[in-house]
Length: 121
Image (cartoon, rainbow, N blue to C red; front, side):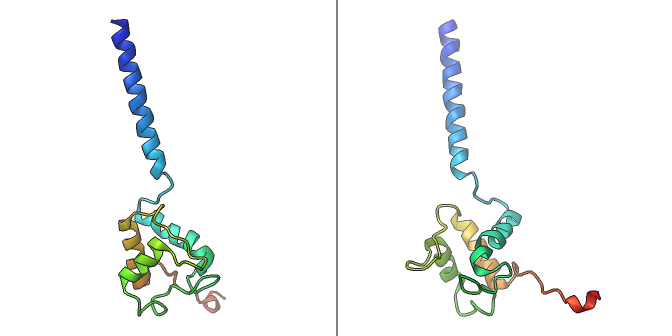
């Protein structure tokens, strides 16, 4: 009976390890819309500017990408742009997350509104 209890403990341990490793494989990938929005501001914003007006990378405001279909934006996010600083994000983002980001960029939902500093005086 001790042998079978030990066997069960080993099986549970192996299963727990496998579950932790599989969870760790996707750890760091954003899961909620708030996390995705933060990802765009922090990660995309580091090259495209915090207000997505451009920087190292081109601007991502709706008027700047109006001619690009959402599918093209998604492809750029997923695959990157060879020969440029735009990396592929397919290893970190799911197709659903990439589609959500593409829709939000196209609609302008991720652009922080401009603050009129003259009104605060």
